Amino acid sequence: MPREHDYTARVVWTGNRGEGTAHYKSYDRTWNVETPDKPVIHCSNDPLLGGDPTLHNPEDMLIAALSACHMLWFLHLASDAGIIVHAYQDDPLAVGETDTTGASRFLRATLRPSITVPAGTDLKRANALHGEIHKTCFIARSVNFPVTYEPRYRIQG
Image (cartoon, rainbow, N blue to C red):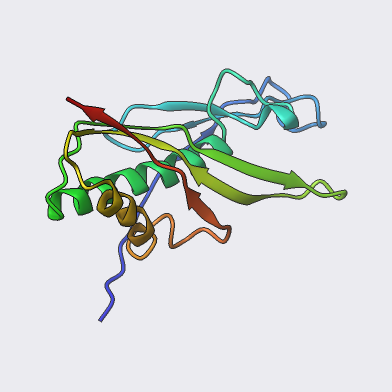
């Protein structure tokens, strides 16, 4: 029988310049993630929508969560398969669209991890693990857009 899990976060709008939302340009699109007992993450809206480009936005955080979930499952499956991973870094790419009404969505994402493994690693087996992750990764199972993988391997001699 499936078990439910609760996840919480506190999102606090920090963009009130004194007038609140009196008009569209009277407030900042800034906010914090202030989850108890964790570091604060300062955020803003997507720069395309007037946000601060130096801060994380919801879209950044979604693609980062998808990438991190994939990484953690890859490391787990690699360990189970006897594949040693020395380093893992991903530069994911998400593609979104905005329609004529201003509504936006993700169309697709590509995870592009660079994975360092020792010489002699079965790269075909390592590569196959990426296709298994979508069966278990919480985030990948929750998004409604296609996710593809373009792993690159660095061989450590």
